[in-house]
Image 1 (cartoon, rainbow, N blue to C red):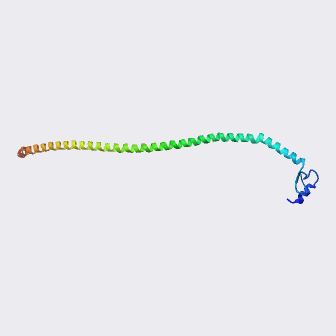
Image 2 (image 1 turned 90 degrees about the vertical axis):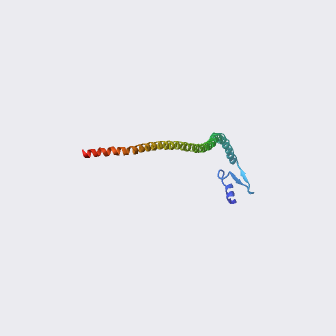
Image 3 (image 1 turned 180 degrees about the vertical axis):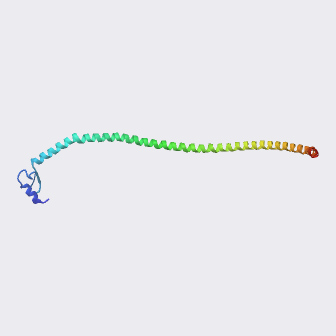
Length: 164
């Protein structure tokens, strides 16, 4: 700041720029209005501290404690959810493995049972087929044995009809 401006302020009439008076040595002179303003400032600080800052700090601390508890609970629930999800996924993977093993075991048993049943059915069919072939062979042999007799009887019958 320019020293000439300060000197002009010091020489101004009372009430205008007289709060700060400058000595020729450059020191600031305090007058009673500066002290009164400082007193008002201190009173204002005390009043604001009592009625504004302290209630605001209490409210923000309470809010932080309430939301901190909720945040801690949410973090705990998130961790519990992650643990349960991991446990569930491990259980599902284990169940899939066990189901695959059981499926393989059951398929092997089913194939073995299928083979036994098919072998039994094939044996029955083969026995039945052999029996039927034997019956057909016997019937064919019997028919072949009767054929000359029937042919003779048929020839006599045709001859009689033609002659009659």
